[in-house]
Amino acid sequence: MKKIGIIDLGTNTFNLLIAEANLTGYKIVHKNKIAVKLGEGGITKDFITPTAFQRGLKALHGYIETLKEHQVDEYYAVATSAVRCAENGAKFVKEAKLNLGMHIHVIDGNKEADLIYKGVKQTISLGEKPKLIIDIGGGSTEFIIANEEQSFWKQSYQLGAARLLDTFKPGDPIGFNDVSALESHFENCLQDMFDMAEAYEVDCLVGSSGSFDTLAEMISCKNGAPNSWEKNKYYKFDMHDYNQIQRLIYESTLSERLKMEGLIPMRVDMIVVCIVMINYILNRLTIHDLRVSSYALKEGLINEIIINSNQWQKSLL
Image 1 (cartoon, rainbow, N blue to C red):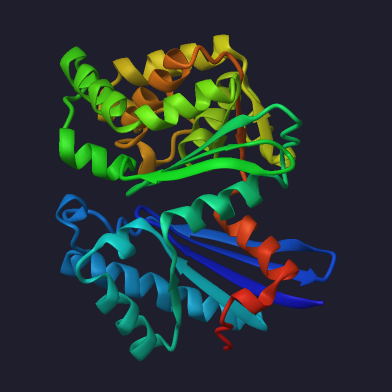
Image 2 (image 1 turned 120 degrees about the vertical axis):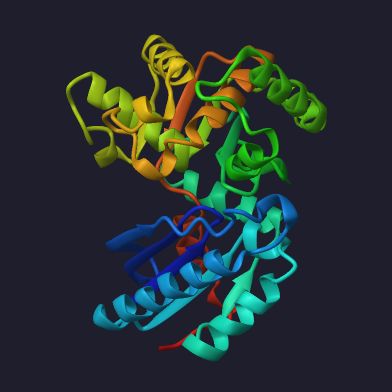
């Protein structure tokens, strides 16, 4: 048994997971997330601003200390859209190595999608019929069409929530024209995804972590059972509940969302564009089966490391 740390450097949040692992599986012993907002102010310019740059390094420094406190044997840090797309992303990776001794693996969108699939599979039995898995990040959104045995198609798009917010700057509350502009953008960008989903006759959407977690928690709070769904790491939406929550979010202002139970502060701005995307895809593909897995990239990476650690260069403390 050894302790493994995973650091997921996302566009909005830096996530830390520590697990006790052996050759047959793992047990999570610590989790944390920090709202770094690495893409703030520069996401559409493909640039990490100086303020966000320093926030990121500070968060990583704190995680290094946490890894030491938990006496982790080895850890792996992976960076996604904000770092891989930024002109100064390589500089951020270099600074982390020089100042913190941390080696960061910058992964591409296909690898990100693959790890998300491996994470989702651990909480949901995908069965034989292909499902559409979606992970809405801050900088990119990953789409995977897969069943229990294999992924048939996957693609990463520059459709992250932070990127969409900065590009379209919707009103508060969001207006009809804002929604129409976003939907037109999705139709233009996602035509190949829609074609593949229709070809595989997808009739179920599985959301991975992030905003989908938030929607599940908001519904749980509305039904008087906060945190109740998390113990199963999986949630199947009642579409009546979902429609009530999405309508509430659509019609709300930022200040109103800050008061909504189950909606954490770091998601109050981005949840609206996420709802627009989810609704458009559900309607476009006539899907009435919506689920969420609380496992995503981090858990997929741990699973891959256990199976084949040779793929990953170890960053030893």
